[in-house]
Length: 506
Image (cartoon, rainbow, N blue to C red; front, side, top):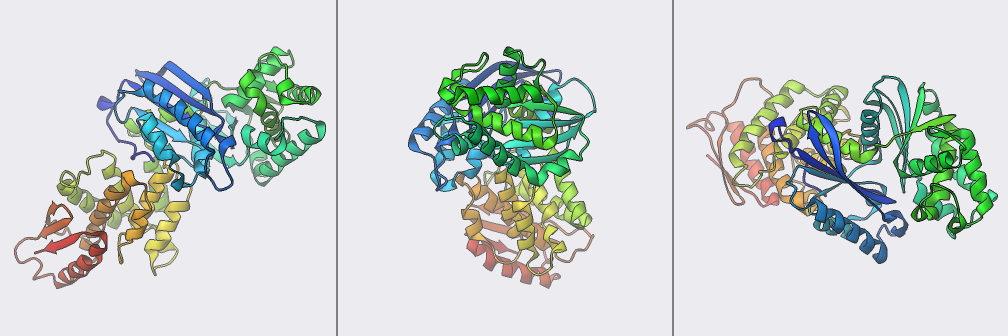
């Protein structure tokens, strides 16, 4: 529930940055120095937390697992203490995606860390993983398959260079597969067959798509793949990664041990034993389904991708801008009209930002994106198109945007006309609730001032906010000569009362 990521400039970009990955199996943190555009890691922390094993049927966390996780996050927070806002980005993945907001865990985690936490969707996780892996590989534009097995999900990505072309997030991981198929730690041929079949069922809907994607090299990332590679190399079954044959040998060896706590393999850490069989079953199912013969292993993964993404945003290479432009084109948005509304909205924002404490440097970006996308729902239908647009923005796969950002965008688009959806803003996380409500008021006024859709510039009113009271002052006589705008402002004053905003004008 982090505040939106600040948009800075290269001159203000901190020399030291950090990324935190709160996964379903392990928590990771890297601290890096940015020098001449290169990433130099100066510190790493990793703790095996197994957050996923604490997930209950009612989408909460068992107290002992929650306490274990918060203690780990607190230790990360001690290392990050003193780092300024904008220099740290923390992301939560599969287990945090499944938690009910009412559980309160995310708020506690943010307090322990001292920084906000973004919960990212599965396909956004896949994009960031690919970015981290691709940046860490030797230069080359060959088409790659990247496989990342986490505690609760497995991400599959095919890409060229640093650009992902195909990405999916599957609901299986080393923790979830171990819980489902090896709950008591017993490993047998029958159980392993069943686990691999369960994995094959997860891959099946995307199998043909990935098989036909013409990838030339397979690369694996994160703890499960690295642990498997360490074992098969230590046993002498494979070199420079994981071969299909070595993975089959490992499978047979696990069956021979019979129980997870009896596993005795060189290169395998004690703490990974309880979830190792599940991880092997997941990787075997991917190898078989996608026809992988050999997999190279990457040292980079999600956390490195998060830092490269931070670097790109500061250099004005924000993938969110490309995402918004692509949406506008795909849904036939009248971009000239949307741009006029954006300019007006940002002009109004400049007058109210300080009194309303809208000082986060990311707010203008969010307001601008909402202005550009406010009519995206028209392609579905004109009647209540704001609802269609909100649905699209809330549920679409928007590269670069966090779940929270999508929720805020959806609320702004939903609230840009007609009845003010006060209840929808109350469902947003507390840190962004009030600022989102104010941004929506600004967007509504910008849309109202351009209701005629005329390209002719209209005079911007002087805007004077005083708490929850907003006064618009137009040039003398202007409203007298524009009675429709006066009538619309009268109607708007009634609607904004639902947002606890008293609108006055003259």
